[in-house]
Image (tube, rainbow, N blue to C red; front, top):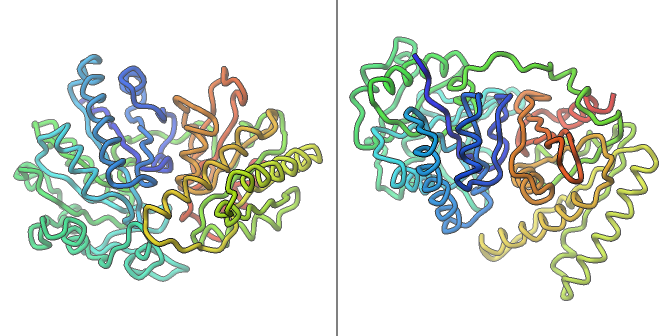
Length: 439
């Protein structure tokens, strides 16, 4: 049975954190989408970065991607495909907005599935309740810091209640189809064949084997004409893509580093996990930190303050590189408060714009780049490095991807870039990623 092409609309660039050897697309014109559809890999990613956008902009971007996809699919004569709206394993993001737009443009679908499990990050779903493993403790996600996100807050870990909350009652909790673990182990093909009219479903998963079993039934139902849409975290993609092990083991990825040179690390994420990891990284030999006081971007003369701040950072990065060390450019750790989500997003864009100017002006010969935080990573690829596409090499740590620029990149050819999500790994993970590249 020929499996359908897996098309992933990723709301930040870290959703490829469980697969390898495929394309990431930073643009979504018809021609670029055709590159993904023609590529030999069973899966490709379109990095929409919608998690950083307002609902209105997120809807417009998703609609544009889908409309161009329809054209590209027709041009490439693709008959079988599955669409995944990949989002956060801690339930932050524009749901149901994005799945609604996808359904209106690419439907009709028989069902859409919420599958937020991400095992490498300690996120799993049991009896329709979504958990996060925190320091060995199974914690319902609504009790974590992620549920209090200033843009995407929520009150429920029981996924049917989460759906009811996010759809504002349009889909009631008792209307949600629950796929429990015992049923998945027994096989759910018959249930899948009976779904219709974009039924909302939530899926248990505690191990990768659970999703592998579920994916087999999904493919069987799709082969009989059922059309499904997925809102998932990364572990479902492992099951759908069914790839062999990556070519170079994580511990050996130092071989991708250019000429054994020192690199640079850009840290935009401000969640507590990132702060803990940053502290460990700054203690490593060969590392020099550069703190960016982002509050200065709120100064009365913002243009002058930004210009001075950028000049100071670049002077330090060049000096550190010349000294044979790796610079860590990180935003100040205090969480600023804003009057409304739009003001917060606008400030986030200003901070990202500054960091991307730093990326553009890094020494051309750096050996590697580590980008910490989902939105920071997306901006690094699409804006800082101005990439159309990037090739996913694999994972340098569980849940932490490495991509590489093209050999003809004007400034940084064949540069390995680590895309490190803000909320993945233990306290030592960022330091470990650095150590693997600085051997």
